[in-house]
Length: 112
Length: 115
Image (tube, rainbow over all chains, first blue to last red):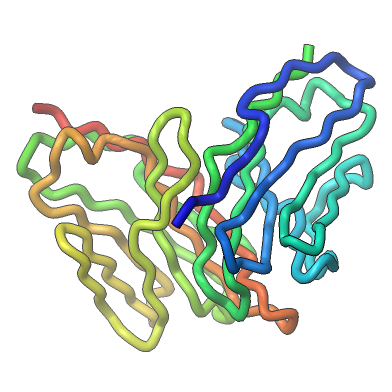
C-alpha cells in the first residue's frame, strides 16, 4: 500500500507570495491533517479535513487555509508568505474514528 | 495543560545498550500516547502506541511504559543499534467529538547510538 505522498518536496518562495502544497493520503483514508514543523516550535497542528470538511483547526492565522477533494486528496495554501513561515509542512492521514495517523515526508518551504 | 514535556533533548547510547526517553503530560483527558521516529529528510513514522488501560506495551525491541497516576510514559529501546539513531517524538491526544485524535507532540529527543 502506498504511503502518504506530498508534493513538491521542496519550495523556495519570497515574502508576500502565496504557495499551495499537495497531499495524497493512503488509499482508503478519509482524514487528512496538516502539521508545521520548525526547530523552535516543534510539531504544531494546523487543521484536519474529513470528507471534504474542515473539522478541526489549530492556532494559526487565516493566511493558512486548506481544502479536501472528493478523492480525499488535500491541499494547503499559505498566502502573503512571511519569513517565519519557513518550515517543514507535514501531512498525515488516517481512516478516521481515532485511528493512528501516518505521515508523509513533508514539503520543505523556504522563504527568502 | 496541553503540553507534553519530553526529556532528554539528546541522548548518546552505546550499541547494545538501552535507550530511555521520558514524557510527562498534564491533561488527564489524553487517552492515546504514540511514539514517532523521524530520520533526517523524512516524516515521522509511527513506532508504537499505548492507551491508558495498560501499563506496558512491547513490540520487538521497543517498549512503552505507562504510569497513569504519575502522568508519565516512556520509551525503552533495548539492544540499541546504530540504525536506531534518529529523533524520537512522544505525543498525546484525546478523541475529539469530531472523531479526530489531535496530536500534541513533545519537543523531540535526538538519539545517537555509537558503534
